[in-house]
Amino acid sequence: MPKIDVLNIKGEKVDEVTLSDEIFGIEPNEALVHQVVVAQLANKRQGTQSAKTRSEVRGGGRKPWRQKGTGRARAGTIRSPLFTGGGVIFAPKPRDYSQHVNKKMRRLAMKSVFSAKYNMNELIVLDKLELAEAKTREMAAVLKALNAEKALIVLDGMDENVIRSARNIPAVQTAQVNTINTYDMLKYDHLILTVDSLKKIEEVYS
Image 1: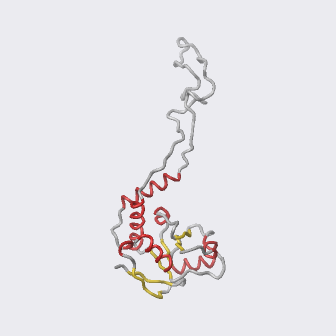
Image 2 (image 1 turned 45 degrees about the horizontal axis):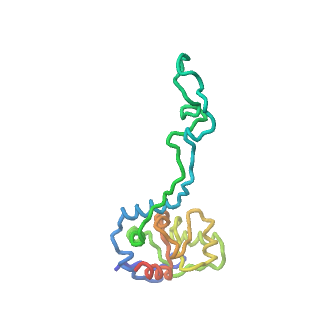
Image 3 (image 1 turned 60 degrees about the horizontal axis):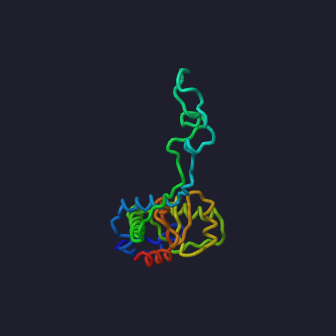
């Protein structure tokens, strides 16, 4: 079974923990992870873009010039896509971009990312993450000690000091065990867990 060092906020090893083989020791399914990420990004799209076709643009009811004899190309309306102010060819219309992914597929994609993070040494486990006050510089010092400047920090519950300390750092995001997703874990170079959040993850995904 995979094992990983448990660090404190100074980056020093204080313990060692055994990880669940079912979550952190599987062969990552890249194709499934890609499918889940594409679906997640598609579901974020509003699909409200819209433009007018030639039949929807106001005006253009009269033939602009006679059919023959002017030396110009034939034209039946100035609202043709060929004219300035005309309609749009194959104009985008409001549509639903959402894609459905089964729950089992989403769970397997999450496990694949957990395993990939462990395999690439991008998983960091802390004994605890507690800050005396909400100060950005304190969180920056913790991340520097862990050598993880672009990271997703997963907490086992709401911790205002940690959340407020991290929110002004551009390349850092905080989340809770019940809000993490495949895309966010892939977006950041490191995944930082506490021992408590690790236990919850193993309870949820085992």
